[in-house]
Structures are given as structure tokens and as C-alpha cells.
Length: 302
Ligand SMILES: Nc1ncnc2c1ncn2[C@@H]1O[C@H](COP(=O)(O)OP(=O)(O)OP(=O)(O)O)[C@@H](O)[C@H]1O
Image (cartoon, rainbow, N blue to C red; front, side, top):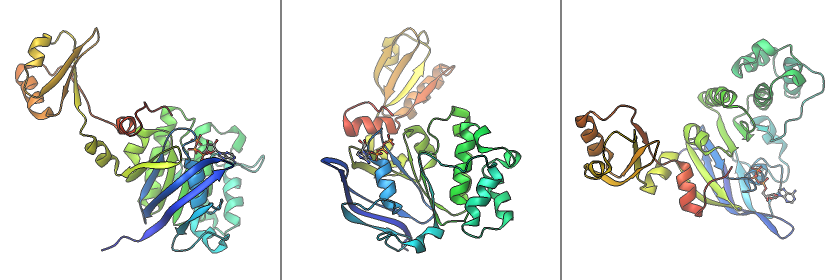
């Protein structure tokens, strides 16, 4: 069985003057998929998104969005797609509800739908609050509700969790999951690799206008074949004993921890359990940041 494709991006290129912002990017997003475009500042994520949305025409390459080309400007696609841009623009002085009603009226949306959207993004109790008086996280949630108000099939979110405190970010994750649970396709960009690892079905890691890797987060991390680090109290055992444990590849100790690197965590953890050395134990596996480091040879800096 083949999965229906919501978006097909084929070999797109886009330059600003001599600068190649997007340099041969291709990927497909399946219907109902949560797809992340990740990468540091200036990687080309926004340009790629805006091309996929039909807001920018690429120098070359093609896009198929919900089975249609967005170029030249394809108005038939608009009711079926929702777009949240990096910088959200709202109507001055309107309350959260009025903002949604105004966007919704462009598509003939019922008022029950407005209530449903306020509920979905957790703003029901802020319905009567002016947008300027909302917190950063609440404003981001309102802009997501505006992108969804007409019940599109696919939604594009450009860094919806940027500049939010950790708690607001977590709240937004629940909103994003709820959107996917409703069967929507989500294409989103983020700087936060840890977040993408938790939320996305698949991710494309971008740098300098190119996709360096594309897969499920779990497979990207597994393919690294990186060591797992088991971290103990520094005084939990002498280093020589730690080195002799089954599966211990490397041992390092400093004032705060004794760290054992292993590619075979099962026998190592079993040996530690047998010794009764599990108190305060932490296990650190590789992350997408390690994948980025391996792909680019440099530490990830959002
Ligand atoms: N209109 C423009 N004119 C000239 N250069 C541009 C323009 N828009 C973007 N760029 C450049 O193209 C590159 C890619 O920009 P883009 O916004 O797509 O990256 P990004 O990965 O989304 O970055 P960020 O995470 O900072 O938003 C950057 O180096 C940017 O400075």
C-alpha cells in the first residue's frame, strides 16, 4: 500500500543574488505526517517552507502540494492549507476571539468552530483578551489557531516554539500533538533538535541550503552507532573496577561524575545492578545533536 503524499518537493534551488539559500532540496511528506525541517540559523528552512507554501517561487525545481502545483499562485489550494509565518501579524486592538472570527470570516467559518479552536489551543479563558495583552506563548498559540481556523488539510508552522520559555514550549507541544491527532499533516521548522526528536515522525536536517539527513529521529540516532554513556557518582567505584566491567569501552571521572561509555549497555547495567551501584545512575544515549555533529563536524548551535 502506498501512502498518499501531501507534499512533494523536488530539487528546489533558490538564490538571493550570488548566495544560494536553498541548494537542491528534495523531500516528500505523507498525509497525516508530522514532518520537521531542522537546522541552525540561516540554514534555509524558512525559504524552503515559503517555497513549499507557494509564497516564493524557486529558481528551479518543482512542488506538488496536495496534488497540485502552487505556482503560478493557486487559489484553489488556499482553503486546504494553513500557514503560520515566523512573525505573526494580528489586527490591532482585537481580542483573541475577534482575531479568529476575522480570519475565519474569510472562509465562512461557523462561530462554533471559533470556540473549538480557542479550546484546542488552550485560550478559551483568554477569548476576550486583546492580542497585545497575551503572553508570548499565548500569542503563538493564537497564531496557530488562526492558521487552523478554516480546517485545512496541511498546516505549515515556521518556528512556532521559538522564543518561548520551557513551560510554554511544552504546552505548545500538546497543541501540536492534538493537531496531528485530528489527522492533519504538519510541516514545521525548528531550531530545537530535542523538541523535533520528541514530536516529529520524520525530520530533515538542513545546513547551508542542503538536506544532510532525512529519516525518523530514532533511525538517525541509531545509525550513528554512538556510545551510550552511563553516569554514576564519582565515588561509586574505583576507575580500575569500572574499566573491568562487562561492556565498558571507556571510563572518565571528574569531581561530579564517573562516566562509562558503552556500546553494550545491557551487560554493563546488569553488572552494576548486581553490585548494587544503581543509586543516582543516569543513562545518556545519543541525540539528534550528536547526529548533527557527525554530519557537519561541528557542535550544534541553534
Ligand atoms: N530576502 C532575502 N534576501 C537576501 N538574503 C536572504 C533573504 N531571505 C533569506 N536570506 C538569506 O538566506 C539564508 C537562508 O535564510 P532562511 O530564512 O531560509 O534560513 P532559516 O534556516 O529559516 O534561518 P532562521 O532559523 O534564522 O529563520 C540566510 O543566510 C538569509 O540571510
